[in-house]
Length: 470
Image (spheres, one colour):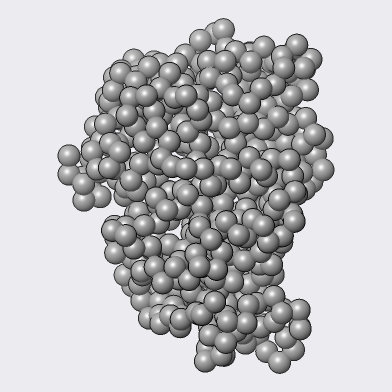
């Protein structure tokens, strides 16, 4: 395939924990050069000796972060360049503001990868991103279509502002051994009400078995669960075009009433783990791996950990998609993808674009995927077929491939379409934890309808601040 040289404009150095400088030189191992496609090596010839900065979203597996560094090192050695890679914890609520300030100050890294559905629209609305359509067009010609979810969250006015990197599996996990002991046969589709009742049935506090392993505190997992449940009931933060706040609806109130009852009704207390009201974003992972939870909903980080660390929980895990609700015939789960964004002012945008094109390939990705199975899967159709690990490395992988390539949008009976149009307002609402704060208000005694009304008002303010007046 013919590649074009892409010109970049500048890069600063963003201080972050976990800096790894990967340099090249005359001692380049032959295997390193062999794994970088020749067209990328040719395009990088004029860049030998140059340096760029990459900001990586921290994966929940240290070994996966190390595997990414190894792939970056191979690229740097093969091209005779230096790539300075730093990790960032994207769940910090101020990550967009911090990076935006660095872009404006001319000290941002050249490129970053972050979750498309959570960040790209916000950076685009702030004017922080360069157009990378030419890169995506070239990659599509070589590797087929990118994952369906990315097409919604990375494209604005027909132009790409992020390069799909890898697909993140998200799933629901049940302890199938506890279910079988209780006479319950695992299945692939549950309503939220059915799941609640299963979690209660398999709970046994005397044996440290707690069925419901989810929190409603400020956390990415809490946000995701609350929004997924509301969507399944037919509610949504915004209209399908992403511009108008529609949160305060009978469907949303019904969903919030259901979830609030789960956390406040004495009937369900036996299935709630002690201390769940103070859990952080890693608590459900830790408790699942400790073998005390019957259900959790998570990215595949928790599944990857159980497999790579040979935790006995892995063999007893039943994986299924999100639950259905009154407004849905099937799960609305899309998964997520990470995308590379090149920041305005990048001093070595050309090298950044070449690195992105290398890191999406099977030789560069498979090491990361083996250390984070299900959490770092191909974002490109033909990459799935380029290494046998992606096809047969785990029984859950076919489900993830189907999820990544399923026809979109997914629709509810009352006219919602998912994914909705990428919206800086919606992403900012999620980052501000408006929904988790709403659920805390309900747990503390507020009527669900009033809590929803209050949350809606906060969302209107946030959308207006993001340039979407209501």
